[in-house]
Figure 1 (tube, helix red, strand yellow):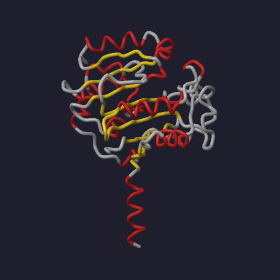
Figure 2 (figure 1 turned 120 degrees about the vertical axis):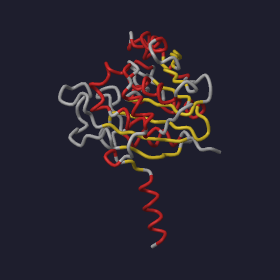
Figure 3 (figure 1 turned 60 degrees about the horizontal axis):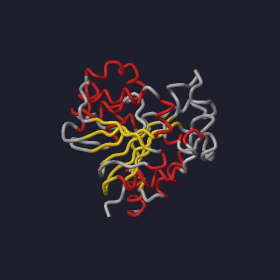
Amino acid sequence: MKRLLLAACAAASVLMVGAAAAALSPAISAAVADKGRDADRDADARRHPGEVIAFSGVKAGDKVVDLIPGGGYFTKVFSKVVGPKGHVYMVWPNEYAKEAQPDPVKNADLAKTGYPNTSVILQPGAAFAAPEPVDLVFTVQNYHDYPDKFMGKIDPMVLNRAVFKALKPGGTFLIVDHAAEAGSGMRDTDTLHRIDPAIVKKQVTDAGFVFAGESDVLKNPADDHKKVVFDKAIRGHTDQFIYKFTKPKK
């Protein structure tokens, strides 16, 4: 009985239910409320930036990679949380940057408009690297893009091994993405822009990471996983998984 109880406790420890998550720290609450985010605020109710960033475990002084940061929605929050002793590297694969202009250019302006501890890095998609060991690599709705044609059909394992190398021992790899049908693997990455959470977990743990938990704060059981994520019926409200992986300390 004791052994069963311990097993149950261990299983529960890797889950984070969004509704039951602890209250946001003052640092994260202040970062989300920052005036520089006023243009982003309409999206907060559906994107839950505070809860997502709290789940990452980021703290003051940390070095963070925001991989494919879009307009810098999460970058701004990270910037305020890590503070002047930390840094946020906005990393763009060259292949993706071509598709996402002018975001990569605008990202560089953040350093001049209230977020001085941020910088932009452009690099080949198959050669991910950070300029120094980092505490967190964070990517939202982009992991599924790596095997697609416009990215050069990069094997996600190439990315995962590079992220493993870039992180400090004990560092975190946080992946948020649109969920595809169970058992679909990478079938829908280039059509529906979704990926099966199970294949993500397998790929990342095969690279040496330990699965450290998940959050359901972006889950939507009303999403049938059959629509392209840009469909008006589901856009902005897709069922998304949030997986947290850690690099072993030894």
